[in-house]
Image (cartoon, rainbow, N blue to C red; front, side, top):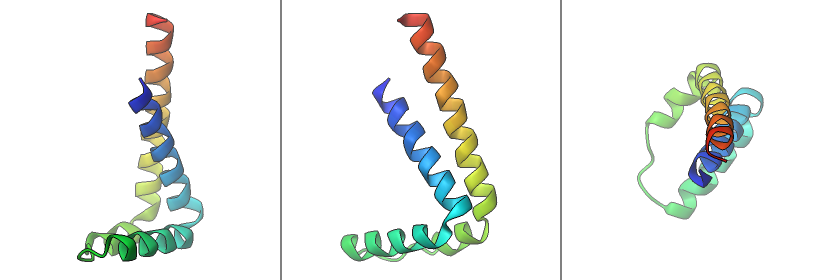
Length: 77
């Protein structure tokens, strides 16, 4: 159950960043890339161009996970 809660929080925060603060997400991505120091992934720019669709999808996933967690906690608690 803890993994579902963690996944919900990550999806919700990612979706909010994609929709409302894409520049913050780019800065965070740049910092992570410099720390990891790996090959730059070319998918990043494609995702940023489709940020509204990705953000809405992540928010929908977060909402779905919220209801799954709620259902499981009511059924098995």
